[in-house]
Image (spheres, rainbow, N blue to C red):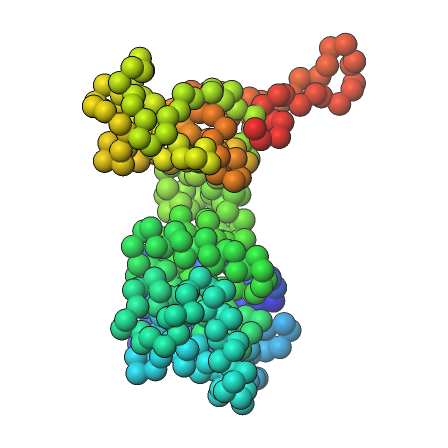
Length: 381
C-alpha cells in the first residue's frame, strides 16, 4: 500500500504543485490520478520514487517512510513507465528489457530468458527482440516499456501517461493488454492520465485533482460517475457520465431478434430487406450490406463495417452503443466466443435499462416474501 499523508510540494518561487495531498493506493490495485493540466498529477507520482522530494508530509510504502529509504533501494522495488516509453535507442529491445535485471546482478542468460518471456507476455512477437526502438511502432515501443518495468518483478509500478502518444485504436489495445496483465500479476499501480475515459476504464479507484494539486474526490469509477461531489467533478467527468456509467451495469436479458444472415460470396439480390448481416463460417459477424446496392455476390468492398459488436455478457453501454452505431440501427450481440446470438434495437436496450433500475414489486400472492426479480435482471442472453 502507498499512503500520501499531508504531502505538499512547494517550489522556491512559491508555486504550489501539490497541496496537502492525502490518499491511499491499496496493494494489488490500480489507483488513477486524473485532472486538468497543472493539477500536480505527475509531481505526485514522481514523489513516490523520490525523483521529486516533497516539501512536507510523508509518503509510506507498505508502512515504511520513503523519505528514510535509500533512493537506490526504493527504486529497485518500483517499475516506472513513461510516455514515449523512454527506451535506450542504441540498445536492442531485448537489451532494453534486460537492463534492470542485469544491474541487479542477474546473469545474462537468466535475464534474457526472463526478458523474452515478458516480451511475449506483453503481446510482442519474439522476433522483435533483436530490433532497435527506432524500428518499432509507437505502440510496440510502449509494450517494450511495460516489459522493461516488469523485468525486475517490482511490487509497485508508476505509470505516467504511458499510452497517450499512440493512436486511439492502439491505445485501446494497450489498455486491454494492461488490464489482462494486471489481472495476472496484481501489482500496486499508480497511473497518471489526463483522459477521464482512460481513468474510468483502468482504475480500481480514481483520484481527481484540482489545479494547484488539491484532491477533489477519490472514489471507485462507478461511484464517481454517479455521485460527483461538486460542479468541478461533474464538469470534469463529462455531461455524458450517465451514459458512461452504463459500463458498470451488466447487460440484462435482452429481447434479441434472430437476424437473417448471408455468407461472403452469396448473392443478396433476391432479399427483400434494407440491410442484411454478413457472417463467416464460424457465425462471427463481418459487417452489414444493403441488398439493393449489391450487384452480384457479397464482397468485402460492399461491407459496411461501421457499428460496434457487443457481448451478451458485457456491459449495458456496449449493447446500447452497438444499436446506436449500427448502420441498420440493429445492434449486433455475440456470445463470448464471438458468435452471433441476435440483434437488438436502441429502444429495447433503453427499456431494459429502465426495467433493471425499477424496484421489484412485492408478490401480491405472498405478502412479505422477497420480491421476485424482473426478467430483465436474469443472466445475460
